[in-house]
Length: 505
Image 1 (tube, rainbow, N blue to C red):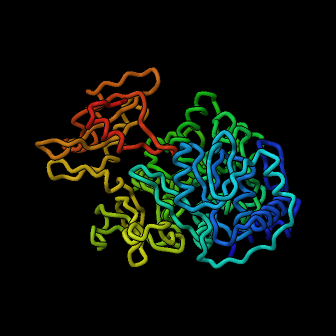
Image 2: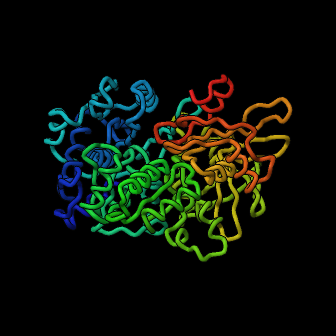
Image 3: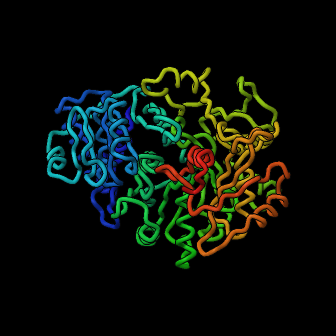
């Protein structure tokens, strides 16, 4: 089993089918894309790389990304994708930890990166020369062989290398058709968010379907550019973190746009608050599907379908809208206590996932692997509850739980309520140490542009919707929330600011 067989299959059957675009310009069809991948594979193997070796990609979104991914797999190599927003020192640490033999970069991102072999800028004649060699016959691989070594965001300490196999990723790709969205050759996936993350992984189902792959000319996410591509190319799908969805909705409202040209927007990777998805549906229409997964079970744990999002007549629609949906087809999902015992429906515990998308383990970290994988189950570290219909509602990461006066308080519940308050753009809730209560709830609130937010109004909204003991004891009105390179709020940084007495710094 080799993921590159999905590319070769389409290339043999329909070589002239449009494959890869840069902006609106067609760069190549499937036949040429497969030929370029095969020639890259030949060059990499001729230069001394062996099956199982790691090749690091540290570059902005670029048309070469796809041919490199599939060229590496064609040669039996493993890809190490690195977020282009990381600092060079962070990328250098990943290169060393992964023992990457070669690296491919764009100069604006990866200039100065060092690896034992060669570090090749994909916009130079050196890269072009690699495409002139002899093509390599497709390398056979075991389904359990490493394909994608993904490094976690590392919000607490050094990131861990998640080992994803050919089976993991092929299962994810096939699951997309069942639980997320149907795809055919008329469709197009646009790579606005980083191809090093979920956007790039979703290349796999679109490659299986022989769809079009579109890399924005800017090499990143710009709302005006993305809406223009949707209009010009049509039937566009994009994966986006909730922060990206919010920017798209803001842009659409400001410009008077609807969802013309968009087929599907899959969102996930961080909490999407109920009020935000309601607004997105109002502005852009019925184009959304939510997925929940982790790097350790890429894109596959649960899904909240388009049909579920639109079923407003259902008596539990509001609860479902705040959930992350039901278990995807190839996995089982449980909620357990700290000892791994199943909890009754409605009770909050740790979310566990088992199935063929769950990682092989963490690279060179047997202790972390043993802690995360137990008896075949992935202990996600996320807290949630299941209802009688199988819908999973996430609360928070276990480390973000607030215990105040002996009562458990889940920050997301408070955040959902505060977003109902007039003038609130973003909010994040953390616990702060307190000598009397153990912890108290503190809310960091970002006002909408040009709006003033009053703490009395925030308090009033909380008292309307949640128990008095859950409401924040303190509000910090700030200009922005600290986030990592994928848009997730860094609650560790918020807690540090409270400790140091520098909120909003």
